Image (cartoon, rainbow, N blue to C red; front, side, top):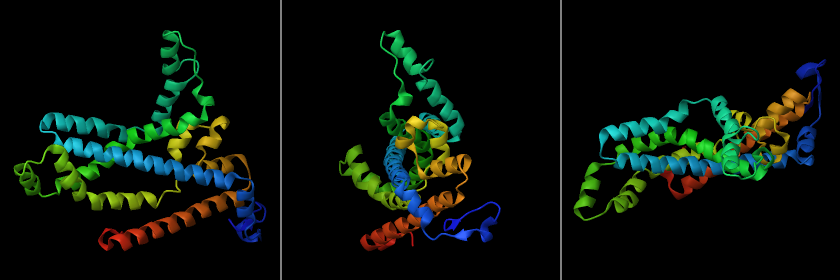
Length: 267
């Protein structure tokens, strides 16, 4: 479909080939570059924030000495993972809604003017990254907690005897000990750097045309194209382009990791 001028009456095999015309139209319209840039930037931001926060949470939880408090904390942090993006979207709407949202209610209570967050595109990368980190960091931290648990406790005991404080133990034992896990998680996430979390973007942003330039990613663009236009060829071209770039990126990153440390690579 990505290489055809698709016609419903002719079907997939009956429609004429049009070469790279769908790709040319996608990028000449400016849409291709915009959604590519947004997808990469959002995934990089989400990767840094969610994985970074997950590592901090994992280290903090493993350093806790009071077992009941440790278990409760881990459960509370893990809980957002089970909340649907539909519910998260409702949270966001009820916080930032212009008329009755929590934010504007607080502002008007203190005599300040209301703020229309839905007409401020520059705010949404921050909002999306915050809610993504809140939802995924607890889940991701479980992987790092398991990796930290696998580190030999004798290393910590020896460091403690030598007078290393908690921060030195984390820096010289914990972080190097979970380095293979961090790199594996990085490679897995880089492999899908051009695949935006459709549910997250669609439920948080919705069909607000004012925010498309700031929040539109390849997945939301493809979905909207399928529901609002009959141009299946260009939609297929966007998806094909996404898959090919994902493949190239993970191959390149894996090759770089392999060159630095062969044992850290995925394959």
